[in-house]
Image 1: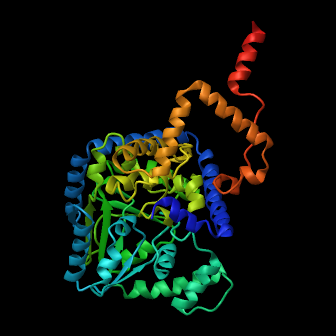
Image 2: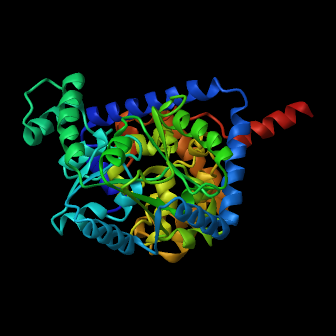
Image 3: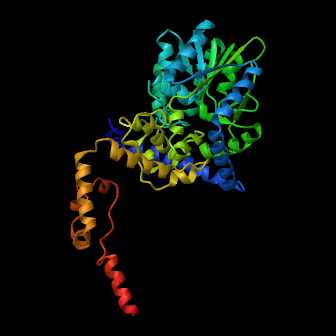
Amino acid sequence: MNHSKAASIFNKDEKKVDWHDKALWFVRHKRDKAVHAVEGWESLRNYGHGIKAHTLSNLDNYLIQFEENALKNGVQVHWAADGDEHNKIVHSILKAHNAKKVVKSKSMLTEECHLNPFLEADGIEVIDTDLGERIVQLAKEPPSHIVLPAIHKTKEEVDELFQEHLGTKPSGGDPQYLTGEARKHLREKFISADAAITGVNFAIADTGGFVVCTNEGNADMGAHLAPVHIACMGIEKLIPKQEHLGVFLRLLARSATGQPITTYSSHFKKPINGNKMHIVIVDNGRTEQLSRPDFRASLHCIRCGACMNTCPIYRRSGGHSYDATIPGPIGSILSPGKDLTKHSSLPFASTLCGSCSDVCPVKIDIHSQLYKWRQIITKETPQPFVKKASMKMMGKVFAKPMQFERVGKVARWSLRNLPKGVINSKPNVWGKERDLPSGPTESFDDWYKKRTENEQ
């Protein structure tokens, strides 16, 4: 199912779509207030962009440096070419420690590799401990947002979900009650866990350490209580030096949720005495994306979700309509690089307004890359007949000025004189939510010619 069809399913519940739109725009507004309070915000963005570009240009050296320093710290380092190898490595580590119960903090990489079902197939219990992730896990759904994974769920829906799976009492969607019940449920899982899995927000080459950012402290609870800690990271998460970390921590939280900093920015360097720490470094298509000059900057992404919060398409179509681990504008760049046929509709799920590029904390030219993917997709994948025919017809109209002028006159007259019921009929899907303006009495060309004549 392409994005348009999947989005139409989400749009059937108009009240929920409106609520989803407003909720994400509220987060975007918080972001704006937070960044406008930072003197030199644009310089900070430029600095972050430069650090990422430099790191990707020297990625081989920094990966080797990171591995050497991590090994010195007593951390075991593993390399995975793809998602399947990543899952097998994690599974082998758990097997070696006879781990049957795993707590996992939010990690988009493990979602990307489909780690949970892989481990569950062998009887290993995997509990996502981020509240949003736990909600969608109970609902047997993927996250719909990379920072707000359950943003598509209302509090009333969460109430019903908890009643079904956690045995809670009906509360009418009381957030305080539901959060308290989730905390009690998850504390038991933390205490009994045999191993903890976390993602990695930033890995530092010159120390061999890494940082995990959370607002709930779930990564800390898991990693400090369980005897085995497995950190899973994509190769693009590297930064060269510890001193660079402050740049990205200032950029990340403000862009993601409008906070000055995440509640917990947890630094991990070496295992606790008697415990084990593993890092699994994963490629899974990143090197291939790096080899594409037009799209390599997409690997700068620090997974803040700002582009999703501002995107008018994402806000009104929902994350699940993208059918990809990373939805929204940045996902629409990353996904076609992995499967061009499956994700060929995603770069077209954009107005190309450029708002995503404006808010990106590391200055990824998202809208430009979306346009470049469109050019590639149009050439390399079959296009719908209606789309090809309409574009061909428009091309012929635009190629002949006299014909273009006639069509313009008909269109302007129609907008002025035809009833709204005709203009906003079924073929005009935009007319469902908005009115087109009344047509002007003359074209720009006519106006310009009159103006020129009067001046003479």
